Image 1 (cartoon, one colour):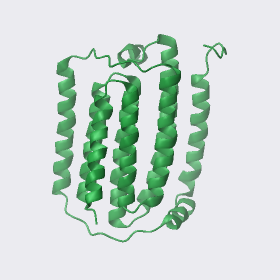
Image 2 (image 1 turned 135 degrees about the vertical axis):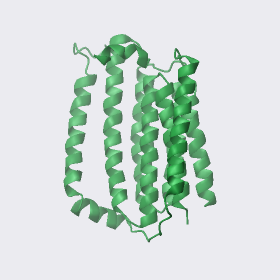
Image 3 (image 1 turned 120 degrees about the vertical axis):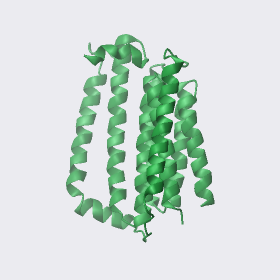
Length: 100
Length: 162
């Protein structure tokens, strides 16, 4: 039996790695991958809680999170592709014109 | 428990490799390994259906999408850092602080009792009875995502070579 404390601990570490990646890496695709990593950390915590409580509703919610993450990744990659086609630059700092 | 420890070590190492790798393509390979390790953790937690779906959706679909974008648009260029060292250390420090805060919050919550777990059939029943409306709404979300991607990624002049 795996203790839920360890699952949540691993999930926390993965989430923090993803947050650090979003904050430090300027490559748009790597930033998007860090976001995927953070989503997966959240999913891992949900699955751990589901296994701990024997409640399957958390696993159904995980299915929904996976759907949303797939949609988010495809839309994000389409945006990156369009921005790259316009500016020939993958660096996030070059997209500062999107601020206003 | 031993399997869980090994898989967690793999997941965390590969997660670090994702954000430390020099080229995006290495980041993707590390992320795929990390997702496989997380899928293994799901298996260890007796969430077999989720483990399979996780491998199919993430490693099979989303990561291939990333790979296609990087390879087709020739985006695999080395790391280009113009952030100052101060900002980087600040980001790493705040991520570590977040980890410390969450970990201490976890340590202070009381332990809960364990309970038995259901099967794939149970998930299906839940999905099509209690969660039927969100399930149908997610198909609408997917439809809008597909339309949005097609409209966004289409070249403005309609020229396929552009």
